[in-house]
Image 1 (cartoon, rainbow, N blue to C red):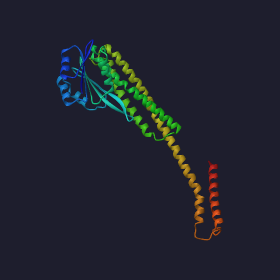
Image 2: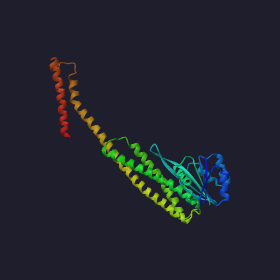
Image 3: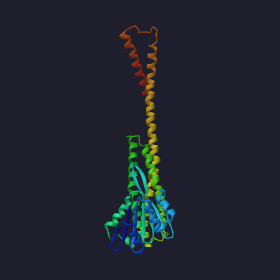
Image 4: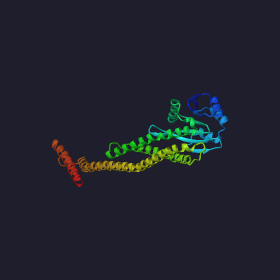
Amino acid sequence: MFRGFVFTADSVIEKNDPTEVVKDIKNSRARTWIDLEDPTEQEIDFLIQEFDFHPLSIEDAMIQKDHPKLEEFDDYAFAIFYAARLSDGEIKEDQLNIFMGKNYIVTIHEEKIRAVERVIARARSRAKNGFHQGVDLIFHALADNTIDEYFPIIEKIEDRLDEFEDVVLEERKLEIIDEIITQKRNILTLRKLITAERGIFTRLLKGEIRYIRESTQVYFRDIFDHLSEMNATLENLRDLIPSLMDAYNSLMNKKTNDAIHGLTVAATIAIPLTVLTSYYGMNIYLPFADKGILGWLFVNGVLILSGIITYLFLRKLK
């Protein structure tokens, strides 16, 4: 799906004809944003032809790389960010590819990304959105909204681990080991993304990308601070995982020992009962064997009494 936006000082014009949008980029001082969601081969070929993007950039944009990056070429800069979302409790990453030239931004992504939709909604709802001042502001809005998606995910991970801690301490439920491992995997995934993206924003703050104006760099510092805050939180959560695992294993060992103790008590009580029943089961004459109901009561009384004595003895030892 192709969406084009042309920003001027007092208006935003939405165009869905790629040819017209490219013409505006080449012949106008306006700032332009092209968004391609699940692009077709024809749309990608059109971009290559009109913008002369490097084949390696196109390859990176079309293949899930699973690693944020920032590169600068002769006529444009190329960045990859990753939007994160939870699906069945696990983090899924949606790759957002951004091409930034002197007066244009091109974004490519396979799935619908909430961060992109929010920036588009902002562009549509406010004529004076500031995007006409420079494409670096569009770049910042996309990056900022993408990174902000991490906050609610981290909060959910934190809340989930707190729940696990309560579950273990209160011994309410033991089948949580898979969920703990899932959260550990989520933490590692986010830390990998955040570590790489902090490197990107470090470069942006140093002014290494010529399309980022000095007046815009201060806004990227705010994103960098958010990433640092998230990284510190994730480190604390990562350190909590081994403690939860240890507590879980200790509780499981306690439950296992309790079960073994119960089986041991039952087996110990059964020993004298087994001896007596085996003894009176022999095919020979035994005392009280011919006393009818009195013999039956005698044997059962001895069995019950021996069981009670064994139980009391074991209880006293405990």
